[in-house]
Length: 335
Image (cartoon, rainbow, N blue to C red):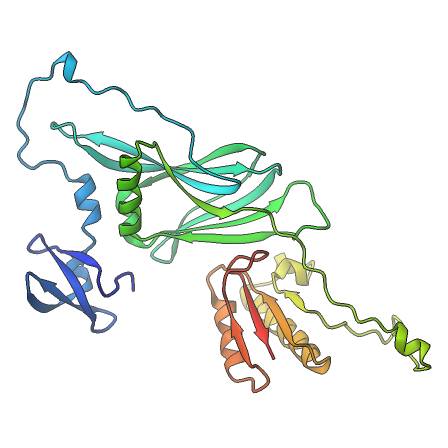
């Protein structure tokens, strides 16, 4: 649900503003308007921020404008960003007859303040549905125009998802990196207000500071056992089994070279079987933890893995939080 207790909302039938005081169910909320509480359906309310920024004065009065009254053009400074890769929002303003600024749309830029060139995949989803997708490259210390986003789209729970990879492969770096940004209308409303006070031309969000290093897999040192006289079996190619891993990558292109010929059901089945295989190996080798890289995507694979883990008595806890190497696309399992 895009609404939370405490949110300010606009009643569409009366054009009044109120505050959500209770979530009744998936379709209704309790609203407080000037001390009066009553239930309202979600399709009867909306966020007021779009109206505040985009609604022109309903009764404009024509006034003469003199040369001395014309405001000086604002200085379009560069995006205010630090090190790393950023997503910059450049508001495009319109004006009403009283010379008040109203936001029409945002121009979205990807800003690369690193020394690395990247290939990137970008997806904008609105209310959980993909609305715009782009694959391209961005050079070091450069910016890349993505597209325009109408201001009213901020009411549709926008999610800006990215996958990055190095144009020049580096064995010490991860093969890819996923991250995303989810915005709420009232957050952007506050950023615009701050931007105006500081007389800046744009505002930005950090996607990452440094491209992540590759995590080295732990390899046990068996030299002491061998020196003590214990026999160490080295599997031949005929009887070799997969070694355990502390990190498993379930992206389908990492599991098979024939993934393009597989349907979605077959891909999903292979990903789950691979997860179960290395989960069992982790238990057999008494690992303390296992990182499962499932990606962000639609969340179907992540949700299925989490459901499996809830029924595993060997699992102490698991968490899907921001990871410097995988963004929100990995789950850490602790045994």
